[in-house]
Image (cartoon, rainbow, N blue to C red):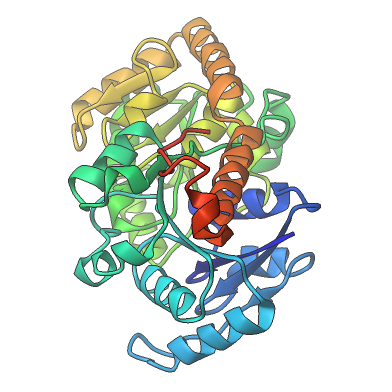
Length: 385
C-alpha cells in the first residue's frame, strides 16, 4: 500500500480544495493510504477530511518560519510516506518538495490548478524542477502553459482533467431550494460560484447584474462563495441598486442544490485554469457564460455548452446572458449537451484513475533497481486521465 501525503496551505471551501476532498475519498483504499498536511490551519474541508483521514496542520507559523523544513521532514519519515503531492503553487509547493527529497520520499509530484497571477510558480519553485517527478495540469491548455510559461520539461508534465461527482451534481428539482431562498419560482436566476478574490472579478458580475435587470426586471443573482472582499462587494451591489435581488450566500454545503436553482452560471474571472464550478454546473445541466481565459474554452463550447466572452467585456457578457435567459429551450439544450460531455471526460472516476495510474507508474520506476529499469520503458510519457 502506498502512503500518499498531500501538502497544501489550508482547506477553505473552494474549487481546488473540493477537488482534493473528492480525490482523497476516491482513492482505492486497498492500494493507497492518503494523508493531508495543511501548513496553516486545516480549514472547514480539512476538518471534514480529518474525520476519516490523518490531517496534520499548523506546521508553518509565518512566511519565513524556516522550522517548517525539519517539521515536514520529521513528519514524512515518521509516517513513512511513499509519495508527496503538493497542491497549488507558493510555499507548500516549495517546502513540500524540498522536504520530500531531503527525507528520501521516492515520488514527488506538484499538482497545479491555476495559471499566472496570483498563482504563478515563481523562481524559487522552478529551482526544484529537477527534484520533481511530475507536474500535473488540469487541462490540455493548462499543461501547455506549464511547459511554455513555467518552463517545466514536457516529459514531466501530465494532464489529469478535473473531475466532479456526476451522481451528486445532477439535474433535479429546483423549486424547493428557490422557495427556501425566497426566490420566485419562475424568475430568471444567474449565479456565480467562486471565492471572493480579486482575480474572480465579481465586479463585472455585479455590473452585469445591473444591466441584465434593466432588460429582465424580475431577474435574481446568487453569489456563492466567501472571502475578505464580501463587505466591499455587498456595498457595490447596494450602490448599483441591486441589493434586493443580489443574494450573497457565503460558503455553502448545498452547492448541488444551489446550482439546480440557476438558469445560467457565470464566470467572470481575469484568469483561470479549469474551473471546477463550470464542470459542476454542466454536470447539473446548467449552461455557462464565461470569460475566455485559461482552459475554459475546453469545457465551455460556444453555442454548445454555453457562451464565451472576452475577459472584462461587460457588454458581451450581458448580451450572452440575456440571450440565454430569454430562451429556456436553448438553456435546456446546452445543459443537456454539457452534462453529456462531463460524463464522457470530466467525471470524478476518471480523475481518480488518472492520479492512481500516475502514482503507481512513478513509484514503480523510482523503487526498481537499475537493472530493472533497463527492462522497462526508459521514460514516463505524459498521460491523460
